[in-house]
Length: 128
Image (cartoon, rainbow, N blue to C red; front, side, top):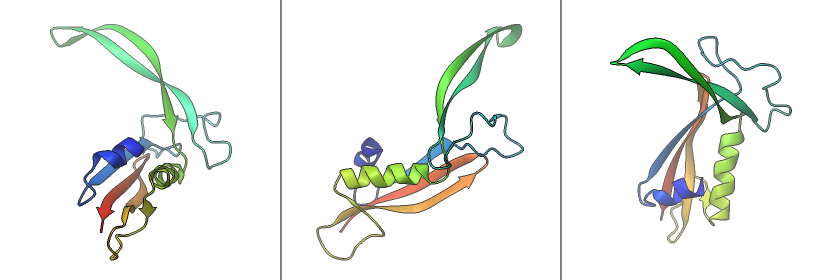
């Protein structure tokens, strides 16, 4: 998070971060079992997600597939915004809408929401 915040211009920089949510809607291809769900509804859960690699020749599927399990952290409600707040505070930035007084720098969380089985935050970096 700190690197993302550092990478944007403090005069007009914006960041949009999407992550998988523990809560999946009925249209999701991701299946989250009860064992995968967060124990405390504050922290997400680390899971292994299958990734299917199809061996293709000339753009056609040949039926041979390899499945690799990859690590992914699925986020609980509020966890992503909390990471942003922690990162900004470590960097000495305030987390609030832009200030009018000179010499202040901060990050505004413009949006913090859930959409189609994903959580997202939109940030705006500012300097007054």
